[in-house]
Amino acid sequence: MPERKPRADATRNREAVLAAADKLFARCGSPGAVTMADIAAAAGVGKATLFRGFGDRTGLIHALYEMRLAPIRLAAEEGAPPLGPATPPLQRVPALLDAVLCFKIDNRHLALALEGTGGDSPYAAEHYERWHSTLQAALEQIPGLTDSHFTAHALLAATRADLVEHLMGQQRMTREQMRAHLAAFTARVLESRTPPD
Image (cartoon, rainbow, N blue to C red; front, side, top):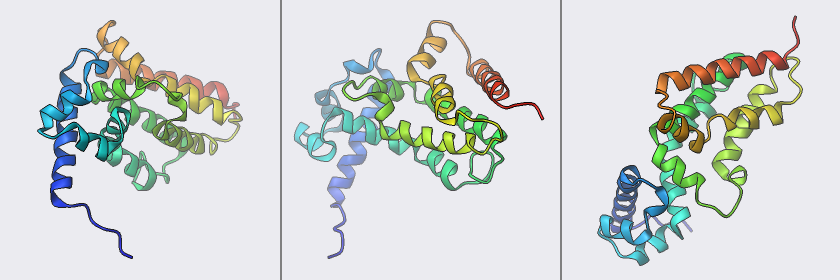
């Protein structure tokens, strides 16, 4: 039996909800302040529509995050250099981390909301596991690097949304400063874990 396509009004409602949620998270001082009732009102739909379409607040945040992340994920999985799998690992690892950092900077409100959803560990989240496995696979291709699993975790820790928010908000660090610091840190980590020729 062929899979049924969602009704046109359901698709419209989903798009309206995602757009409304994105605007609300972008404007709020604290991601926790945005409720499902706020999102339903901004989207012009009933709360039941939200719960039917997304399950709960965390499900809605995940859907919005994944929608925004999809182009970067596709580039990392199937794209050309510097993110794609054919890129030499010493170029690909810094490029992947830079892409994650830029995404977190550009989507700070959403990344903070997702990392602050509570419950399960953020390290068990699907998007984190996917980035970790992609990074670990690239690290495993670097001759002499023996702790790719831990190294992938340590490097990704430098891109956490709460750290990005702290550095940009409290420390007044610019986007380019953060990118430069991350690139230098990544280079030091990789150099320390690979033996000299």
